[in-house]
Image (cartoon, rainbow over all chains, first blue to last red; front, side, top):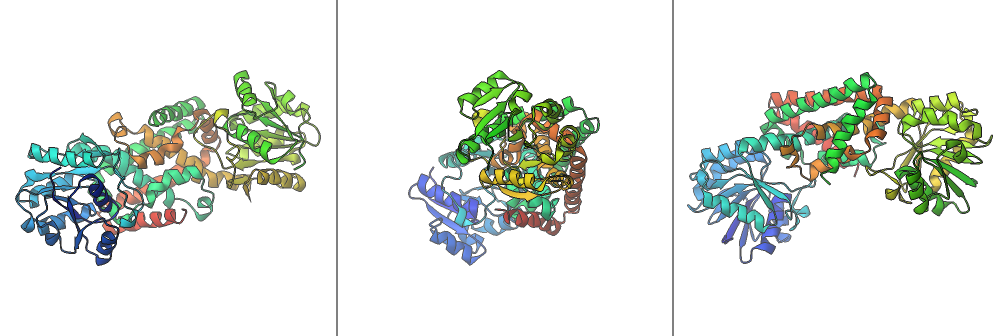
Length: 279
Length: 279
C-alpha cells in the first residue's frame, strides 16, 4: 500500500478502528480525521487514532491519497460535494457504508472522477458506538464487500481491495444491487426484527429474558441514527425481507394450527441444521 | 436439602447438568437416571452424572425422594402414568419443562398426590444437546420459575425452591397461565423468529452472514424435537406473539414507506435503549 496520507471522515467505532489498524499495518502513513464535533476529534487524537483532526471536510481530505467515508450513510450525499474541491486528482475515495446503491449513485453524481471511487462494506462492527470502542483487530478475518461498477478503474479497485486485505479482511465483489438485496436480507432485516422483538415485550416479559433473548436481540442495541439511514435507504429490500419473514411465520402458524408436530419439527430441524452448519 | 435419592428422568444437557450440580451441592445423595436409550445412560454413567441408570421409568423412580422430569415436554403425559405405581407416598415431583399449563394439568390428572408436584422452569440451557455438554455450573445465577397452584403443598413448594437455590438459581413464582404467556413472548416466539430468519435466507445471503446474524439466530440451532413440543403446546401464545411482532414490523414499514426518518430513528432508539438497559 503506497498511501502516505489517509483521510478518515468520521472517527467513531469503524473510523477509529481503521485508524488503529492502519497504524499497525502501514508504517509511515499519516492519518487525518474529520469529525463535526471537537470532542470526538479530541478523543480520537488522545487514543492515537489520528495524527490530525479537522471539523471541515475539505481541510481533512487535502492532499490525501485515500479518503474513507465512515459517517452514517445518510450524510454521504451532503459530504461528497463539500470535499470535491479539495480532492487531489489522484485521490482514491471509498466508504464503509452498509448500503451501496445510493452511495455509488451519489459518488457518480458528485465526484469529479467517479472512476476513482469504490464502494466498500467492511462487515465488522458492533452494537457499541464511539471511538472508545475502536479496536485495531476489528477487521481481522472479517469479510469486506466491494461493489465496483462498469465505470470503476481496475487499478483503483485493486488498490482499495489491497488496503482492506492489509487490515486483515477477506474480499468479495458484488454489484451494488446484489449487495443491497443480499445484505438487506441477512443483515438489515434481522436488525429490524431484533428491534421489533424488543419493542413487543412488556416489562414483565422482559424481566424474564434469558440468554437466548439476549443473543437474539444484541444487534438491536446499535445506534438508532446509523440504522435509520440504512433502513430508509434500503427500504425496498427491507420490505421484501419482512414479507418473506411473515411468510415463514405464517407457515409455522399453519402447522401449529393443525397441531402438525411432524411438520413443525421438520421446519425447525431444517433451520437448526442450516444454522449448525455455520458454526 | 434432605433428599437422599434423586431421580432424573432424561439425562441430556439439562438432566445431566442437574446430576453434576447435585453431586457438588448435596453430599451423600444417590442419583438415579432414566433414559430410553442404553447409550445415553452409559454416557451419563461414564461422565459420573448418575450412579445408576434404568430404561424403565418405574424402576428409576423407586424409592426416590425427588423426581425431576427432564425429557421433552411432549413425553410427560406418557411418562407420568408409568411412574405413578412406583412413587413413594412422600416423593416430590417436579420438572424442567419450558411450558407449564399442560404440565401442571397432566400432573393433576395422573399423579396420586398432585399437591406434591411443583412445575419448575429453570431458565438455563444452550442450543447444544446431550449429556456431553452437561455442566455443573449451568444453573449458577440463572432464574428458575416455579408455577404453584392453589392445590400445591406449601412445604413441597419450599423444598423444590430450596433445591434449585442449592444449584445456584434465583427463584420467581408465576401462575402456569402467566408463565406460558410471558415466556411465550420472550422465549418461544424469539425461537420461532430465529428459525424463520434462517429459513428465509438464500445460500447467497447466508454466505454473507456476519456476527450480528450469528448472534440473532444462535437459538435456532436448538433441538427440533424439544422445540416442536414447546411450540405446539404453547401455540396460542406463540400465535399472539407472531401477531404482535407483525404489528411492530408493520409500524416500521409504514414509517419507511413515508420515509419518516425521525419516526424510524425514534422506533429504533427506543428499542436500543431498552436493550442497552439489559446489559
